[in-house]
Length: 158
Image 1: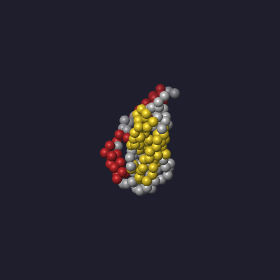
Image 2 (image 1 turned 90 degrees about the horizontal axis):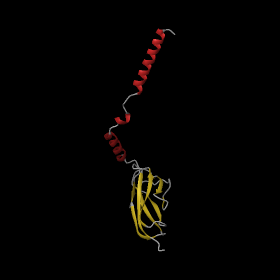
Image 3 (image 1 turned 135 degrees about the vertical axis):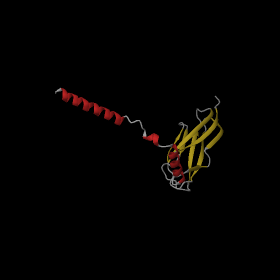
Image 4 (image 1 turned 135 degrees about the horizontal axis):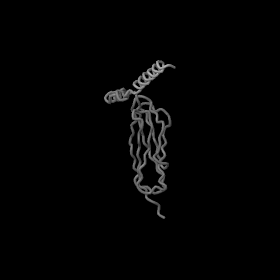
C-alpha cells in the first residue's frame, strides 16, 4: 500500500470512529422525558376509568389478644370486589411459616361478590408480642394488599 492509500484508510477509520462515537454517546434518556404529571394523569385515568377490580376488606388488622404458647388460632378477613371487573388473588403469603393463609386461588371474584381469606397462626415457640403479616398479590391497581395479625403469646410454664 502506498502512503496515499494509508492516509485515506486512516481518514476513513477516523471518520467512522467519530461518527460511531457521536451516534452512540447520546446523553438523552427517553425515560427522563416522561414528566411526572403525565404519569400521574395516566394513573388517575386508569383508576377513574373504573375498569379494574378493587378489593375492600371488612378489616385489615386482627388482634388475637392474649393466647397461650402452642395455641393455633384462626381469623377470617372478609373482602368484596367493589370494582367493575373480575378480581383475582394470585398469591397469599405469610411473613413466616407460623402464619398460613387460605384464599380463593386463581378463582375470579365477580364485581359485587365477596370472599374470605382465612389466616391461621401457630404460636408454638413464639412467646411474647407477635406481629405477622399476610401479603396478597392481586390484579388491582395497587397490586398488593397487606393484612396484619397480632397476639401476645403467654409462654408455657416449665
